[in-house]
Length: 334
Ligand code: KG4
Ligand code: ZN
Image 1 (cartoon, rainbow, N blue to C red):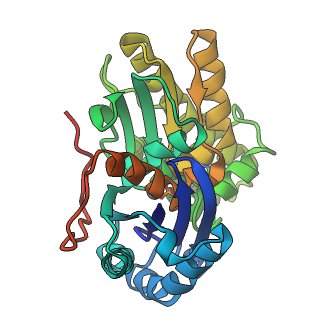
Image 2: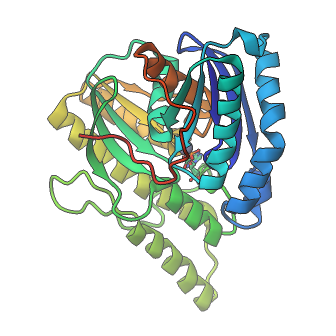
């Protein structure tokens, strides 16, 4: 199975056999292009996707040691994401599917993030409780079987990854913000500066991170005006701990009620080692097991797309060659 992913600023292609054997996983990141803007510039992103999509596809096949004629299907992210970026991957996927007369399988980017866990462990036991934390989403999802999603909670304002990116920008750490904040936090004391944690109503599995973001910005601004030196590592560690605490507390609250057979982490922020460690520790104390994909399968990649598409392929859920990009696509939840 060939997977193609171009929803944001990574041009990625992967070859995955039987839904879990990753034969090639090529990711051309544009982070360096967008770094100076502190975020992704859509026009710049789609132009770069166009430039690199063909070489990336070729590299994936070469690395897997196969030719186009060996493929059984093409899986591609068709949303959510940047319209102009999605279209580049879609056009490439449709071309391959049409030329080889093999099935085209449109994949929801969020479902792909969740399925990164099936790359690690194909026979995950249901029901699953998955915390999806990316640049655009913070969703707590209960999965009773393949394709059956129930949204328990979501962010009411900024996504977890988005606050990492915004805080990193005001701290002058560039884009994407997660990795430098995580690195800086290692030298900081997470209790030196405490930032607010928003839990919303009792029993709510929703999240809110805008208050935390504002608190960090205000803290930095106040220090600047007073000419007071700050310790960036302590600020980063205090901020990261506030995000992690809320994410883990809410996930554990949902686990106690819904008793999943496994807890999953997914999305770019799942690459954060403090989050993974803390969730595993807290879950183990209450008898739950946690699966976290390795970082390369947490951030955007095409192996997870090929994996999610594989399970749709098995069910014969093919897309038409008229499949269009759906920038605002939501996960089909009950
Ligand atoms: O899933 P992803 O690659 O793209 C989207 O679908 O949005 O997630 C990207 C987000 C960015 O906001 C980035 O800062 C965050 O994931 N991220 C991290 C880490 N690595 C990436 N956040 C915290 N810690 C990390 N190590
Ligand atoms: Zn993503």
